[in-house]
Length: 143
Image (cartoon, rainbow, N blue to C red; front, side, top):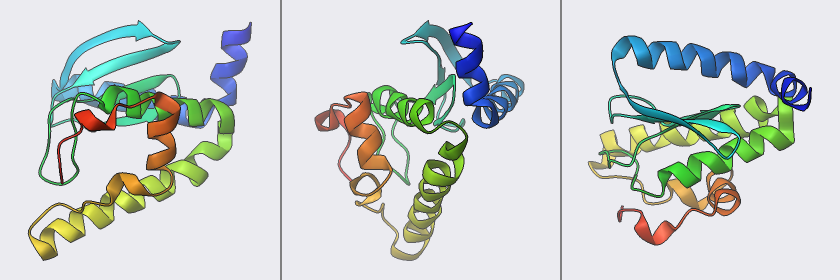
């Protein structure tokens, strides 16, 4: 009963998580999936998109040219799942929108400056996700 209520509490992001799971499956970007910490942890290739959507935590430990990503990414994305559990239907506007804005800023920064933006994780909601998930940021590649 508790699990069903939590699934409903996070319904908008859970529906997007199911959609993202299907997209990653169709694109063959799923490397491994397992249940851990009350979530489905889905390791994806760098061609996939690391994102936490309710019950579904998509993560990648491989670096990319836009945002520094390393083995701490699983804990970072898990931190977002805690935000989702706390905020329920408010997660997407409160966390998802600012997070996507930071992604778009990082993409634009790379296009204009020719290098990665070093501030991606320093502001809300990314720094909060690091803290909640216990991400060991010393394992994150330098910008």
